[in-house]
Image 1 (spheres, each protein chain N blue to C red):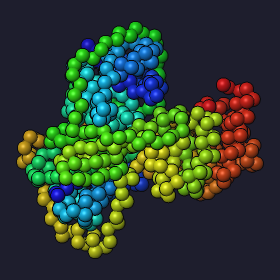
Image 2 (image 1 turned 30 degrees about the vertical axis):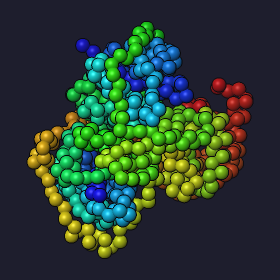
Image 3 (image 1 turned 90 degrees about the vertical axis):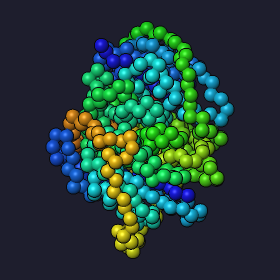
Image 4 (image 1 turned 30 degrees about the horizontal axis):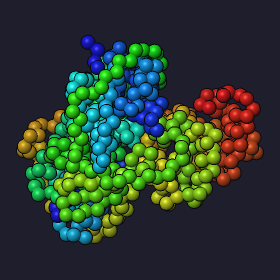
Length: 325
Length: 255
């Protein structure tokens, strides 16, 4: 019998994360019945996503987060309760910042095995591929216990669109978040509306030579043309010119885009730990001896303050000149 | 207050990792204290400096993991506990149970601190597993911590960069993220002094509810393929940028 797979349909701004298409492809690769797990208020876009990627059951959690309750704690409690109530063999989701919070929490509640950041997943065979040591080794694990939890690295599994019926159901069992954790307040940070760093298809990052926070504006301008997220190296974060949430690398975020553009980044092992699986890496650096030249695909040896605006201009003119849309 | 800090020894982040067999790693790589754990140790030391108490480091690993304890002891922690486990890839469920049992065995902990994640296995799961086993609440990835009697108030970075301010009762498990503090560097006399600090070695089988170590089923390991040499675009910058965009579109097909 095929194993049953639950997929946490993470949303942002009311829309499912685009990288979920890959997670759904992995979930139903062996013909497994898929159960999408989502909030009731987001049923429409989640049903649309599920219906376009094989279909399945859509289990909906009522949106009744009482004041002072922590949303991530509620999601984790829902995921764990759904796995138990539905007898799911696997729980999957994305290794995004939210996924990295709620999936381990759910795994602990279930005392279930967990791979937090998988780059391949076969629920039928019970195998998961995981990067270890900052991507310096790839490990293939066999997981025999059920249920088991797997976070999938965004963009690591190609989507497999296929129309399928969606059967909606309200989740009727109790969801009991840890009431000892209280949300006192949320300090909203005013961020650009670009894609989330961990699932962006294009990332442009700046290093210490960016010199000031304001100078990151040249990366934002290029990112706007590319539909990219803006990242930073640890050196830039340590220098106080970029916030930690933008940090790509071993002690920051792991990104997996089609295109990674490193501007003024020397290319330390620790930085590569967070972006080495990028399909194509471009370096813009005026130091022709920097380690990044041994590890990138394309590059321009030039001062980034001249090269980045030149790239932005070239991208704009290519977009205006027809070409591929 | 007695503060327990979970620490882990990890391979140096800059070292090349070699395989010693189809499912084993060459373990001769220089080990270091997991950088997120340094932040946890630093936070514990600052609490002790403000309000007194004791800072006890707890690790699980082979005898060589004593090095992680010594690194934290050199920073200023009082003593260490080494739960022995010789497996290269212990099952995190076992690790969580064993560390929780070691914490219970220590007794009277007011707070457990850990790192957000380890830079080797990168699961971000042990703080939650330890907390679930102990029946304590946990919040991972904190960038600010304030303690008042019986309550921890923490800040963590949520999805999209928003900051969530949460409160939870003590005892609890908190995972430290970058930004919480800047860990101190031990000086030479601290490194020497750390060698004399007490470390208690504990067999996990002697801890209640733990049992024998359980390994992950690693079917194979491989090194990622090296990247081909870079194509460097030269000449006038505007033309180089146009050529780069063309290559990204037509050759790499990523635009």
